[in-house]
Length: 206
Image 1: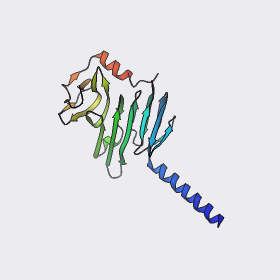
Image 2: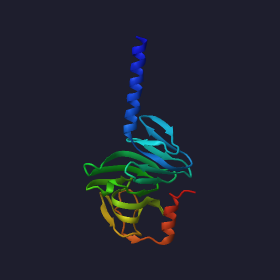
Image 3: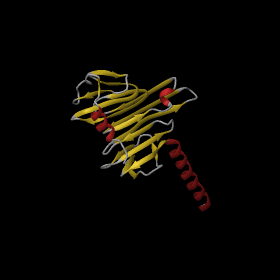
């Protein structure tokens, strides 16, 4: 009887480990300072190479930076006091389809990977004031200059939209701002060098 219980316990533990491994969608590829992940009411500290999982909320502390590399080579860098919620992640190159939907609070830098290059892809980052639609893109987003959100395009193209309107960034160097919650994305302009530097500094590692 004891042997049967031991075998059952080992099989249950193995099944749980396999399920967790299958649920992992990426890993911490770079870290500065403190960061944690919360799922199902359990919080754990994150270190280099730690796995991240679907439906997990990843947070950074004061002066922290965190880069997550996902299974398709998408990279997302978080600035300090940022929060990332991993809502949807599907990468199926055999079927030519993929979906990435993240929710972000705080400053971040996004570099799309193979999902954005699939024939059928749906990639977006949702912030408290607007959603950024992505295809084959690198961009920065976050609060800046007392604006609720700024989005700056490094390469590719993105749409910045909410219920009040939409702006398209299609040339490197372009940016738009959402002044306050509920406001439409503002005019598309080429950001001056000092503003770009201040934006990128929020996600730059020491």
